[in-house]
Structures are given as C-alpha cells and as structure tokens.
Image (tube, rainbow, N blue to C red):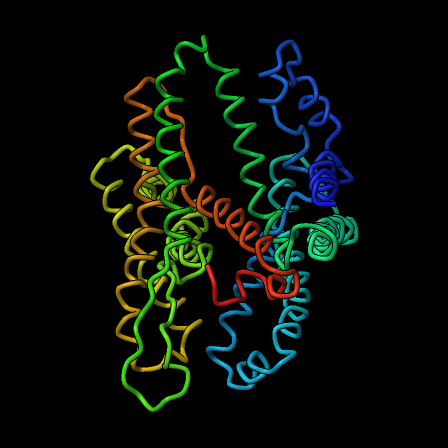
Length: 391
C-alpha cells in the first residue's frame, strides 16, 4: 500500500493543469532527450512544475506549524490541545487551514505563470478553476497520506512522509541532470566524490543525533513522576520547524525587494546577490550563514519552549544543554555543511549542491518509521510529527 500510494503521488505530477500554453507544452516535450538513460531521467517529470500537485504538501506543513503556535497565544486553544480528543480536533482544523493556504498559494501560482506567459490571460472564473484544481491536488496528497496512515507505513505521519520524500525524488533527477550536462563523467568523479562524502556524513550524524538519549537521574523532590530516571533526547525540537522559521525570517527582505524592483532595481539586485550564502561576496556570504545559523539555534529554543512548557523545574536546567546541542546540530547540518560542500565541490571542478535540511528530514522520517515498526501500531500512531513533542 505504501508503494502504491507513492506511485500515485509520482503519477499525479505528470498531469498538467488545464489551460497551459500549448507552445510551452510542446517545448517541454521536445526538450526531453531520450537518447541516453541519464538524459531521460535527468529531465525529470516534464510537467512537475505545472502539474495539479505543483503546490505539493507545503500548505499542509505550514498549517501544522501554525496549529503548533496558536496554543501559545490562546488559552482556550491550549485547553483544547491538552484534552483527550484535542490533537484530533486540531488536526481537523489544520486540514481546513490547509485549504485556505493552498488557495492563497494557488492564486500566487496563477499570477506568476500568467506573467511568464505559461498561462493565458484569464478572468476571475478561469482563475478560480485553476485555484480549485491546485488546491484539490494538494488535498489529494493529504488523502494519500491518510491512506498510508490507515493501511501503510504512515503511522500518523503519512503526509509528512510524502513531504519528506519529495526532495529525495527531486534530488535523483537533479544529479542525473548534472551528469547529463557534463562533457564527460570523468570530470564529475571528484565533485561527486565530495558530494557523497558530505552527504554520508550528514546522514550518519543525523542518525546518531536522532537516536541519542541521556538518562537524567531524579532530583530529591516530593513531586510524583520523578522517582525514576528521565530519558531526554538530544534533539528535542522538531527537525522541520527551526530551519523553516529561520528561512521565513530571512526571506522577508527578499519579499520587500521584489516589491521595490520597479522603482529601485539596484536595491533589488543587491538584496538578491547578498541575501544568500552563495553570492559573489565572500564576507556577506559568511555573514548570512552566521545569521542563518544563529536564527536556527534561537528558533530551536523557541520551539522547545512551546512544546515542553510543562517541564518540571527540577529538570529544566538539564534541558538547556540539550536545546543548544540540538540547535547547533541543525545549524551545522542545514546551514554550515551545505556551504562547505558547495565550495569544496567547486574547488574539485564543479558545484554539486546539497540540502542539509532535506537530508535531515528524510533521515528523521526513516528513523521514525523504523522506530514505529519496532512498536505496536497503537503506540506508534498519533498526531503528526510537527504537532507532537518529538523529533
């Protein structure tokens, strides 16, 4: 059932939305080079960017993140979350919020591709059809996640499993495209070697950190529940939220720069060139990486404070070192190592980028599934990873 759901997910990416420019469709199909296997798979799915599931599960993930933040500002919602059926109710609300977020994102999608002449000029009714089509594609993926939870290896996180596997599928096509565009495979030996070494290092470190546990001996106290050692995981925060929060914060200047582009194109060009760790200026690249890593660590503290606000005072002091170590690991894996890998592969002959965030998320989901298989289904199933107090 898991394999069938994943096959359906990949098949949906080959169904283009209605009203696509016929000339664009022909151009995309003619651009496919079937002469070699690498060229064929390197071109990826022809309509992945224009398919009915082009939005993916990003709106659903954003909705889950929002539902983890609302209890911090609303005591009534916090009371609902702590009730026996609270997680299920919040999960249903997250589905409704997903529809709203997907419709808003779909509107931006239609405006973007209308500007790029991929879609023709349209009135409000034609745009609404496309918005509903894209929103329906996203909710179909959520439905596939529910099927994984019911009959497959979802264990309450089927949709998150599809979300985590999305970059894995794209990575295969990206690497194949790099190999297909290279003048010779011999020229890629050293760059790919660098990429493999860094990727294996991130995977090994992710597994070690996700499985790392320390037992804290109880402190003399009259409070119940402290009579036996408490197991504390090294990575207390969810692996998705701190990096996503940091990226969202750093993307704000880019949004404002895009609005200023018609009146001040020079400022927009400067922001686009320097609000990245891969720009032309080494000093601004380093500064951006430092700010990004610092934000990841800071948001790790924020996520822990929101997830574990009921920590007994006797144990609170022991959590701080774990929060810092978990945040530091995320900062190194998501920010520092990809920058180092890119520069090392460039020095080896060609840049072969890697996403530390995608690697950590994929490893986290694999660890979660394996851990769930080792337990009973009743114990493993529960709220999504983003809504539960676990990595």
